[in-house]
Image 1 (tube, rainbow, N blue to C red):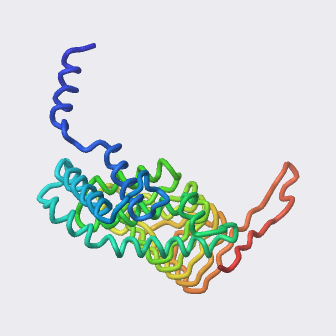
Image 2 (image 1 turned 180 degrees about the vertical axis):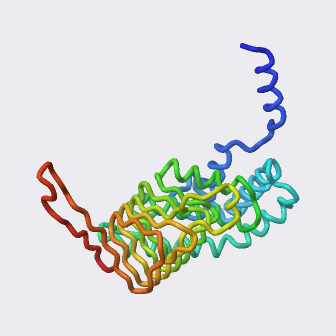
Image 3 (image 1 turned 90 degrees about the horizontal axis):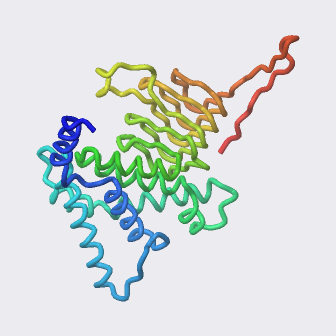
Length: 278
């Protein structure tokens, strides 16, 4: 192998010798999830003191991760760590609300435990609640690594910058994409394959709102695509499967997708896919 190439790689290795590996960040997320929900815990605690020391260890791990973050800039890792753990009760409350939304939103769910242990939507939104809070505290890169870890496990891609309200339900979930500047209200339910994305934009638009706003109590069925930062879906609306939406609609709208099937003789049938109210 070319020595100049090896030298270039070695210099990069030295420059990032202590960068927190994605696996270490994912490990911290999994252990934190195990603290919040014993269904994911890999060890049992014999005393409350033992449990408290375990949490202190997680705080130290986060401080170390943030200290080694190559994009930390002027951020004070210790301050961010303390603030994040102060906010953990409210993050946990949001997760409990999401469990309620998933349980009540899916007739197939037999218990909250089943939702916690088996639903990809719960893993994805839990990762988002944690990543979003770190993002709000000014942390770069680490939240995105947490989100991408959840993406790799669930097939659900939520940017940590997205603002998502209370009682959020992702049913099934595979193929869901939620962009950075998306705003989602309370009691929203979306199905697999939904994209809340941007219209074609330039790099210079990075700091503009590029993704849609979804009002409270909206249901978006499988395969729907809603694009654009100026696109607003009014509250209590229903977006049918496979709808392609790039303009705003008022509250209480019902938008359905109409398809035509053809063969060599022309149109043979017309089908209107109708959604169902939540």
